[in-house]
Image: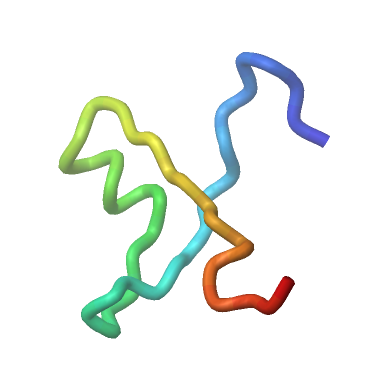
Length: 45
């Protein structure tokens, strides 16, 4: 389990354009990142 201050492990996510984005690639382009996971989108209830 991650603790406050730990670096996030590298992961892959699909983009809205159908490409693949990795954390490592994004960090090469940007100094800091914020990812928002909105899990309730397109779900009932």
